[in-house]
Image (cartoon, rainbow, N blue to C red):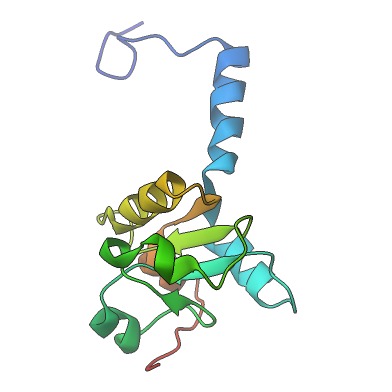
Length: 133
């Protein structure tokens, strides 16, 4: 077998790989699942757009609340019960704002997941954006 950057390090044993990949679902969800949940009367989470207000106004996921990641503090979350699940997103894979927001929420003891793909993934999936506030 040719040795290259892909094959040089062997893959993890199947049981280890299974645990690793299944555990990712405790940290992330995807745009299609968020879209489906947001279409229901009670999605079971609060969707947070953690981008700047100007980006939110230009286009955001319908039903999202704008709270920039740098402004996530305990007092801004006081209207939500402590067990409220937050799903955060930013621009997309090239942006770490969602991870920053998720880390801040977790540091405050809040349950959190990241919407993989962010707004870029949302649009790639063909879902519409809301504009304004």
